[in-house]
Image 1: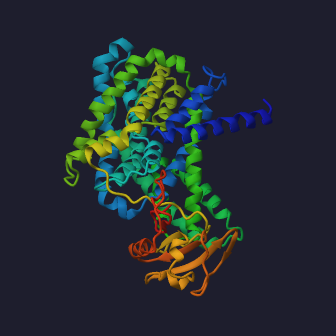
Image 2 (image 1 turned 90 degrees about the horizontal axis):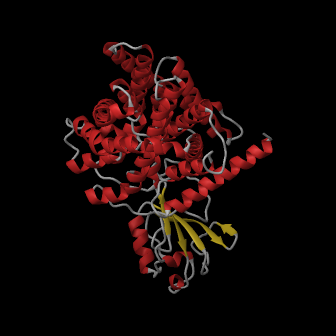
Image 3 (image 1 turned 180 degrees about the horizontal axis):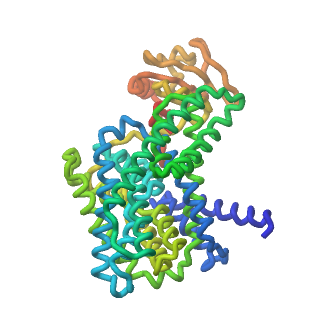
Amino acid sequence: MQIELVLLVLSLLFFASIMAGKAGSRFGVPALLLFLAVGMLFGSDGLGIHFESLKVAQMVGTVALSAILFSGGLDTKFADIKPVLGAGLSLATLGVLLTAVITALVLWLVAGTKLGIGFMLCLLLASTMSSTDSASVFSILRGKGLNLKNNLRPTLELESGSNDPMAYLLTVTLISLVQQGGSPNIGSAVVLLVVQLLVGTLAGWLFGKGLVWIINHINLENVALYPILVLVSSFFVFAATHFMLGNSYLAVYVAGLVVGNSQFVHKRSTRNFFDGVSWLAQLSMFLTLGLLVNPSELKEVLVPGLIVSVVMIFVSRPLAVLVSLLPFRRYTMRDRLFVSWVGLRGAVPIIFAILCRASGVPHSDTMFNIVFLCTLVSLVVQGTTLPLVAKWLGVLAPIEKRAQVKNFDIDFPEEIKSTSSEIEITAKMLEGGNRLMDLKMPAKTLAIMVKRGESFFVPTGKTTLLPNDRLMVITDDLQALDDTLKALGAEPQQEQPRTEKRKWTSMFFDDSAT
């Protein structure tokens, strides 16, 4: 196939996915679900793109996951996860194990005979789907801007970022047992899990510290190379940890945590770069997996797939969460119910199912289609209803919507905790005088720049302001600034999605701002 044709097809696929994601966000549909749908639409049962390479799909998924996990760690504060460390790790280990065992037991009793598979294969199938998907959790929680009470968001993100090792260990152990026969060696499996967790955590921490030192001392002349250096390093962490017999998924997440909670040059531009990389990785991964599946084959597993989905959503996941969080009294019953509802499946279970197919496990084609169908059900049922369920359970915390400063492309160091605000000057605001000093800005507020038409200049107190000027200020007292602007008669705007209901906009330049 000509390279020009390949580029044309890929660009059309990505463009269709982006447009679908934009349209779906208006109706609360997760973008990841639409990426899958676009892949299925363009696949062999749709517009005829034949893609059947398990190796390519596995490679794309692995590379994408390493970038997604590193980006997730990069945006997570130690201060947020420290209070929920015990709960997150309990969900990531005990919760995964209980989810797999309960799902396998119910599936074996209900549909094992009909599917012609024994308990061991049922347990393998359940193990591939036993972990929550980091890409889905990060994307949906952050994409929908949910502000949750009682540290629920860091709990869920920590769980999804660290529970892949347990699911991976269960999957590869059971694949080996199915291929070779025999009874499971529980002691060996526990030792392997502990080694993978310890090596993965230590490797991630050491590599993260080393990367921060390199960034601060390498002194690159081209500053655009700093984000590239971090991206390449994240892939190095993932690959190197694999050869150290540690868990690569955990290592790259820990490395992202260490880097994101350290001070280094060009930190904000690096984080912004990784926001784009993370979305590109998610789009590529889900689009590839959508191309890999044949929707016509899903009809054959519709009944068992729905049974597994119902069991996981309403039985095994809630029971696993309740047991895993028993020692942690800080979580109310409403909190636990919401955590159980955020049992999102996504790319990781599909990649684990690809491992089963590549290993020649009996009935692996059927298992792959069941896993894919369960992922679709999870994204549709759970992903689209997260805001509604959060509101119904009363776990939403108030959040002030903040719009970005649009007319001033200025990047402040992360250490600056002040609020940057953009003010649209109106004729009414100038009735008491048209000089900057006449606006009588509150204390701890500094006007730093004016945009007039296409021109920018630094104002003084005697600068004459005109209607439609844009004034950029920074302040340590946002409430006082808001009160001053209201007193000047700044008129509110009509409500727009994800923007303020005011003519001035503000953005906090701390670690939570993106």
